[in-house]
Image 1 (spheres, rainbow, N blue to C red):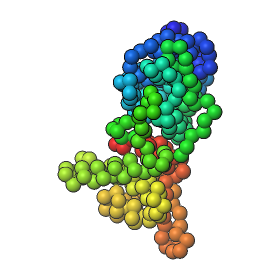
Image 2: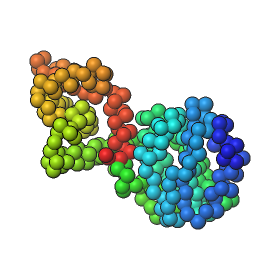
Image 3: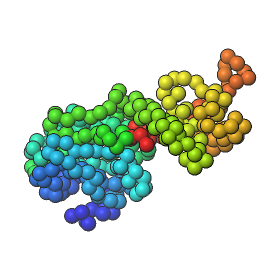
Length: 268
């Protein structure tokens, strides 16, 4: 039936589709995660097995899923995984993972239309009607069969993204200390974006000169780079209300939104 679905409109509530999932994976002894990638018309672009695990735990890497979605230019995804225990009741981890992935997908313009849990005889649709709350491939998120597994998040997507951005910055600083060679490994524009993302997550303003220091460039080169990033509409320059001679630099709202999705999916 997989070949028959390719190019067809996918409706998560379709009895025929549900029966296909039950037949193909409901009786498997291991947990399997499949992702159906859909175009803007909800037509199937690809049906792929992304992860598998033990009966107790299914490793789930958000970046793997969304990177593949972007590669396929998918507008939506449908998740399906099985519970070998025969009980399709979602665990707390199943629910929280679904909500987290929906939040990340929304930031990347990739809609999570549903998450279906199947067994040999039953199924449960998780995503219908749920609103999202506010990833480094290890430790992974987990989909659990039962209530034995935990998802390692903090307070939500924003907090998780900030924590991963901090880890990324620390590792980049360590790399610089160990290897040096900024002319070979330096990415001053990316360093600026990370620095701004962290400061904005901590509600701390960043002046133009401070951002220049974070880039590791000489001040004149840094100022030129800031201007280029502003011209590209990645950054926004605002005046300091307390000092008209000073400017603050902020991430453009859409850039901040997408960096949240990027870092929520994992650190570098």
